[in-house]
Amino acid sequence: MLHIHNGFSSTKKGRIMKYLSHRLSAAMWSRVLLLWITLTVGALAIGGVALWLGGFIQSNTRDELASQQITFTAADKLSDEEKQIPGMVENAGLPLTTGNQAQVYANLMALHLREAADGAGYPGATYATLGAIQRELRAKVTAATDAKDQAAIDAAQTELTAVNNLRNTMLTGSTLRGTLLSAYGWDNVATGITAAGVVVMVLGLVFLVLFVYELRRGHLPPTEA
Image (cartoon, helix red, strand yellow):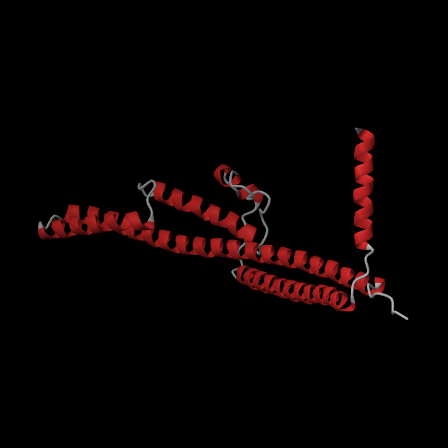
């Protein structure tokens, strides 16, 4: 059985080698060369554009992050909760310049927003949910004013002021978080585009090698006497 299998493999290998050494006609050989050179030019062009585009997006994104002049808190000043954020300790004291750092800082801001809501007595509150609370407190202020109850007016107005401040904080923090997360996304998209560009460029070089190989080998049939 092994002998038969080896014989079959040898026969198949011989057929393959005979096929590879087959000399093509001039027309077919020209088409093969045209195919390889077309693939080479196309791959190199697409890869070059991808590299440029990836570099352009990443450069703009990181320049914008650097312009914000955000610096992570030093490690010895971080709270225990802040240290639990992935990447926070590793970036402590460093300027924020990359998309991955932007994600870490966005998570830090989310923690601070939760702490602000807890401290104001509205745990789990968001910018949207605080709007309903504002309307209720304004109604209380109006009712106390109509009743001419100064103590109730002062209490409701104090609580309303605290909610207004908290909602403004939520708005500012959420806006900045959205910007940071957007930068994180675009920075990683740029990295992916650049990586894809490198792969396509490598393919282009492979196609070029195949073109040169075919050109130097020559598949034209010998000239008949």
